[in-house]
Length: 127
Length: 127
Image (cartoon, rainbow over all chains, first blue to last red; front, side, top):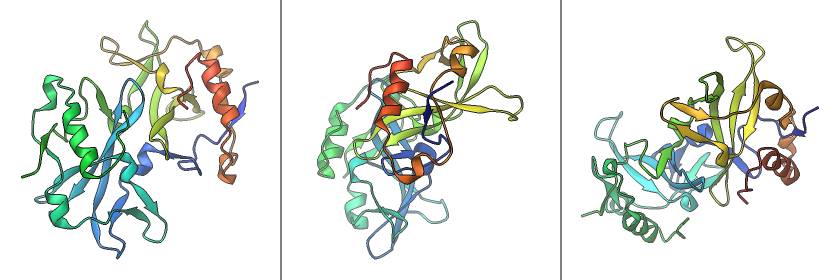
């Protein structure tokens, strides 16, 4: 008889949250304004740590949308907002570290960029 | 001008993989036999670490399917298989730690169960 554990179909517990629940969660300011949506998280293969979350930002009905990377520790879920709470202005988000096509495909690890990212959000690096 | 970084639309790099790419990836034995599919990963909210991956197992066309939790470190992607490689028999998987409805909803953290899980797969605990 196998050991009995937590219900594997539960997508959130006090301590854990499932990747497919994080995906699609909105990001809002405290006043309720919607900034964007979490699209996915990027996981460090070796250590199994979330490197950053990818959030949509700007645009209208999917047109002109941009993406921003957010350190995991920046994502604080707020029950009243039913969203991750992030109090950054559009200007602050526009000047946040962004990405450019093809950079990563060569296999560059680019820890420098991740350092900039975590610095920008005053987040403790995960590595 | 914002700092230029990796292409945020790239779902896999040498070092990172996106949650929505892990979801749906098959799990196979070295001989190509399909065991199941990764459904999602469960992330520790506080530290941003993957606690375990949830894999379907058994059943036919979705009927009678079960689920098994796998420590992240057990998932080794194999290019030839185009799948995560896992060399466990059906019997071994049947006796692997499973879950029971409702257990987690009370908010029990149940580190003991996670310990059993990691012991079973001889995986180093992530915590």
